[in-house]
Length: 212
Image (tube, rainbow, N blue to C red; front, side, top):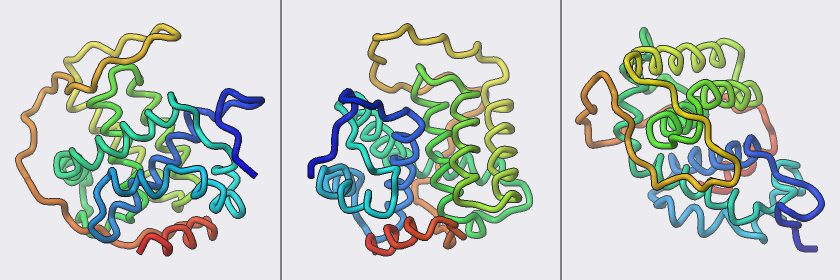
């Protein structure tokens, strides 16, 4: 059977699309695949149908709008990985980057990319969605850790920046561009390794294992 795209009888939520993007971003930590290679193998009807057997998150295939959102996130986080990791390191007070679980890192990279480069997504929404996703994969301590880092990041980097304007319905966002920040852009050019994540979803562990 073919999965129904969004726009049929039921709509895939932005939250579900974001979580799917986070899982793809998580998979970038294994091997040497590029963002486009991950998207080519994961963002397909066949792959969604395979994963849907154990993960309801994949029971619907996204329409073009949601699929483009997923592509933008995965490609953007991949392209800006060193910058995002430097921000995480800057605000992970008392933690070395290598101690941060893989999934927690993927969630924070995604939220920070939305804050920095997706003007139509309010900062508070990016943080709240990241925390909600984290609750499904990480312990409460790690969820609080993620919330704290993202909150500190937004307060420090955008203290003098006006809030993002609300996006009018039906208007397509412009190509991503960086927002003005209080501090200079980090200069590190290589991604740091991250540790394994204590993921709580058994089906996702199987999914992740298939990416190695």
